[in-house]
Length: 332
Image 1 (cartoon, rainbow, N blue to C red):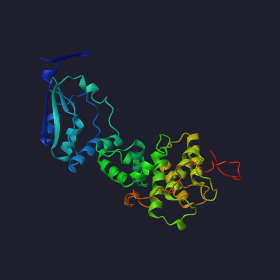
Image 2: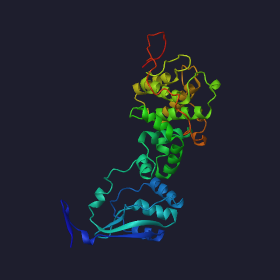
Image 3: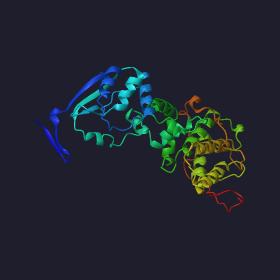
Image 4: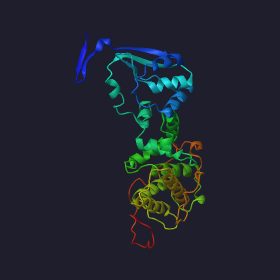
């Protein structure tokens, strides 16, 4: 006999039984009849999400067991069992019996994998910032939520991975020059990606009022939107003020204790980024719109063959000086 002593008592290790079952809707109903009354409140949206995964054949076997305690009471798995019933389809689960009841209090204490960690485990190495940028880049703007919320569920992992793979070289180049540090957050990075991909897709400089290539324009955006100045490029007040105007709007939101991570902030950054990409003169940015001014990101082709050989990887261009013939420029 094997036992394990804890502060809560002695666990009979030989008594715990684990088996693999294909759980049918009828079996799920039977298991749920043993649910303990103080289990956490059922989250119906999560049940619906799991049931969609089952219906789409995207629900995978997990080591997280459907668990019963020593009295045969269900202590873990109620959401998945309800999802099986809602989907009206069977799904595979490990079933653990005779678990100590105290395990119900500790079952959710572990740190769950983030989406980027899930994707990395799946074989595509992805940083958290890259994952967030992709989700906000593909976000539709006629919703109440940003892409980081809308596309954060596991059923979107495949989509996020596929889009990321189309532009992974861009992130590699950013990483080489330290533009994937924590301060380069989404939506700033998402807009930089949209600028780069759009310009790489439409490279004709006659459509832009500046002479920068796609990569340089995207990192110039990051400089100005994040820092308010650039050590790489000199600001032209006729073509480069959009990110600075956006910074002023963000400062106003912060000063008034308004959220700076919501859909309005994303729309502000996207509109400013599009104006900056074109090199448009701007004094104010309107966020009352629902159609993305950029080309639909999901439809754009891969940019992994884009040449970065002419981009300014070495800091050699004058740092912006507000007092050096730039009267009237906005600088924060």
